[in-house]
Length: 327
Image (cartoon, rainbow, N blue to C red):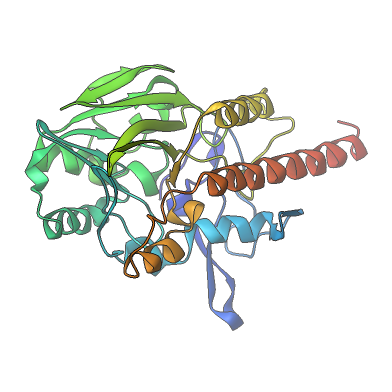
């Protein structure tokens, strides 16, 4: 089981049964900088409720929307082209993206180590070679997104690049005793280029210290589109936004992330969990032809607004509780 600083469990390690009667599985809160998991072995509290443009979530239900159940994390989703040179090669609830270039390919998110063979098969089903993976990037330092980095590097020789603020958490991620590879440390605003494609690393902290939102341009049918791959803006159950000893300004870090998110131009929203951009519904539309369903600037704004509303609701609840306790 992967633990982060402060004893909290990472999001992939925290599978618990929320309600045995309904067989609903949930993942107990991932934590960054001392967040504490809410109730090992029992159902977390639902937390505050928000409604944005007719979409209603509790803190727990929004988390469950993202992570799904244990089977969703490992069941492959049909690999497919999204737009331009960007392809989906992840599972039902853990996104992995392949960016294809003439000089080799870029993989974003290895997910769990046990999912690496699934990612490899998805890449091969699309007609590409796994061995052509030259660069491996990640969304944020939780095991369900980056645990497989060492195995991907072992199998492909890819260079592993990571945001500086996430390096300590990644170094602690050692599946099977494997050291976590980091070939280059990135900083906010740095670019990663290969074969004519350039990605920009945007530090969007809060969910983890080095949570990274990636942007790039995609060409499709003679047009150029702005693509945003959301790292995560989630305030999961167990996140401590008030009186956080390890990250005293964690609320400020989230606020910074939302400021960055609102500043990014976006035509095609993607994310570290496919539910962040409504993959199921969009994939179903591909077979029907017509406009590319992944071009969805309104969907990006909605997702950011939902995450930001939940952050403010959780913060207000925790501030109220702290005040009532005289802290």
